[in-house]
Length: 143
Ligand SMILES: [Zn+2]
Image (tube, rainbow, N blue to C red; front, side, top):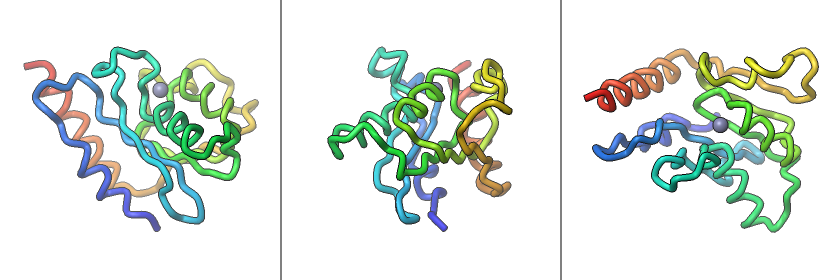
């Protein structure tokens, strides 16, 4: 079992960041091979979501756009844009920690028709920790 908690603890909420804290990583043989965070606000790029960042990083470093042998883990359920990128990279196994009520790809895609294995990580303790981090972020942002 990978210690995601360590990485989630590392998503620091800086005073001046407006980027929602999202952590994504690619896993092979039960090991994290690449990881990234959301930085779309910082980099002024709509595509700067953690999932797309980690996919781009893997493609660059491996010099291969076929990531079918990797599993994507992400703290927040992917949005429609990231779902498209995951599909383009041929990743068929996705694990997420918490639901993304507002922006989930499920809001736009028929879940019964997708050819992707998307499962929720059953770790309520870690999920609660992450949800607290997200709500602290939004509290801080509103100030
Ligand atoms: Zn996204």
